[in-house]
Structure formats: C-alpha cells, structure tokens
Length: 192
Image (tube, rainbow, N blue to C red; front, side):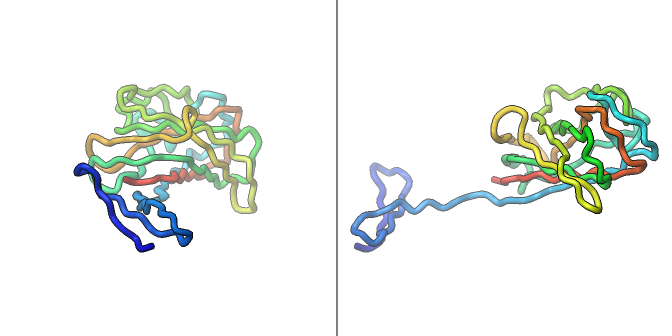
C-alpha cells in the first residue's frame, strides 16, 4: 500500500504512511525548537548566611539588584514552554542549598531589598511562576541541582512583546554562601 494524503470536508490535509502490514499511520510533524537560555550573576563578597525567604542577588543595595534575563522566545511576542531548570553554583557546598527561581514577563520595577534581605518585589501582573531547586550534586568545581515548576508539569507562556523573561532567586533554607560566588540558571525551553 502506498502513502497518501486525505482531506475531508475542507479540513486540514493529513498524511498517512503504510507501516508495512497493510495498515496506515498518520504522519505527525513535531514542531518547536529546544533551547537552553542561561543567565549568571555574582553575589556580594560576604559569607553571611541566608534565611529562608531571603533574596539571593548581585547587590546588597535594593536599587542595584538586576534581575536575570533569559531570551526564551524565538520571535518577538512569541510563545514557549518551560519544563525544568538547572541551578549551578561556584560553591561545592550542598548543605541547605534550596532555592526558588521566580520568573516574570517584565523585570520587577520594585525590588524592596538587596541580597540577603527579605524577598519582596512588585510584578504580580507579570508573574509567570516559579521553580523550586535543591542543589544536591557536588562536584570539584561547584554544585548543581534541577527543578520543575512549583505548580503543574510545565509553564506555557505567550509574551505580549519581546523575546525575554526575567528571574530572581530566593533562598528557601539557611544557606551559607561562598564570598563572591556565582549562580547560573539554565532553562529547558521549548520554543513555538
């Protein structure tokens, strides 16, 4: 039997392929492009332990905190799906290394505190969701962990404009950092 295409009552044409035993199977083309956007920041030069609920950021000064930027959409005003994230640190310690990555469509305008202050930001209208990550894999040159969305198996997002989203990191345990340590977040992104 040969491959053929069929359309019923003007519907989208479907292609069928002979599977070798006299039956046909629909041919489905997978869409989407996988990418792994990442962002890195260096925290301040101190080893003051975080409390659960503290902001982990690039500066102790609230007005100088820069959200991480991730280019996640293939085209402006594009859509994408986030399935998991990886958090890597330059520290080899995995003790109490629990974090929450908060994601926003636009960078939060108000970040009330700097690094090691209580996590308090504006942006509820642009809040996408969060990933909880436990950094539980130690290596000789750092540590890493993976997380999935806090709610649901994935985050499906349509951007109104642009191609980027923004992230801020929150400590979820009493983590003692490395002075001037780096944090790198990498997203598993399926672009439309």
